[in-house]
Length: 252
Length: 323
Image 1 (cartoon, rainbow over the protein chains, first blue to last red):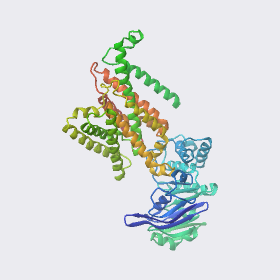
Image 2: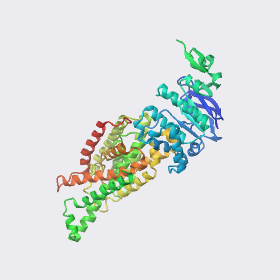
Image 3: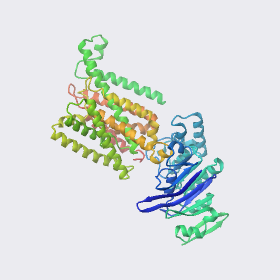
Image 4: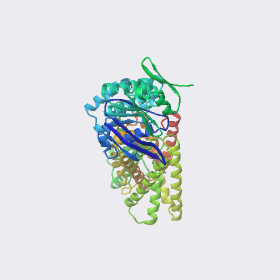
């Protein structure tokens, strides 16, 4: 599905992503964690062809992302960055409709409308379908963009810090949605997260990055440990199982 | 009201304005005269050589300048830009000065093409500047545009002064329909073709307005779409500069009014933007023709006053802060 081989990105002399390799084949949620500047978003952007790759290669369904036509990739992988829709006085329904662009090239068929309705229902946006994006709250707008990506109907979905600017209630409901997209729709979801606990609560697999390198990659129990987290973030922490949920707490 | 009915209503309004445009002016011609069969050769000449071309020119210029403004706003993700505030029109004027200095006898069409080239270059400098400065929203973008426009205009003035072309430059940089006669405005039809092209590519421009990341994600050839948009905007600016001169504020006020009411979906709003732009410019021209008849006030002046007032009202009403 997704294969990144020794991806590298330079900003000037520094390697912001340093030979990062990642393979994703099965449905599920993979969280990328790490401190600020670890290269998480840059790695995601290279896989999603939003940034040029300096070294290494990335494939989606065996297609090299730097050589494949944008429209072909857009039916296989979707990506959502943090800042979207600067000039977006579109209705929620119009926006989600644009998610069908790779399939319809602008001429929506009955099948497209069905997908749009599905996405609206999945994100419980039905009542807001006719509202303009600039009239929504931050959380609602974020959900509308996720619905657009769902309507795009790709097997792989990359989300770059989808919890930014969301309060804890909206953050939890966003992660539940991500979980459901993997469980019910069979999506391969990669999500960049700041908060270790969201990763440990909702992800199947956690990839930890530091200084551009992937330093740990495995199931939650293997990566969310005191030793790994301390090494990645450079901070002493306590990792505890609380009612079956692995949680990471900082030390005073 | 459905979009279709609103559209018919708009077209009807334009038709009324068009008829009014035929009968307002210094030469004697009235509806009663035409209805009474009092048309002689002289009247017909007035109608076909002056009135119809002039009215058509106002409609065409208004529609295409408004659409150019909308495209510019989508492509720069900023509500406060239009061709005459980012240097596009000024660069077209500079192009006209340069080509007139070098090839005074060149046909208007050739001069217009050169002006388009200059306009495109000027617009590209603007786009490069706001990307380089990482400006995305707010009032800094139009400010940078205004500064650039000022620099280009100063260059044009300097050259025009040296080459004794200041009067021509004045004509190119301030819109006026009083010189429009048959044979002198037809380039403006290109603007209508460009509007149609913009409508055909409307979805792509709307997507581009959502930013590069969203566009690329959806498989849009973002850079190509931006390039296409900039070419359309530059051609429209050059065509208007070469024929009737720049009209300020149309590209700013009309798209803002229309998108506030109807949203940013290009496919939906482009026809309305075109109709509203055409109506506004023709309306302003009619006003300019009748306010101190038989003298005229240039449309650029009327539009400057009306446009500034509408624009201030828009800002004061404070639409959602999306820059």
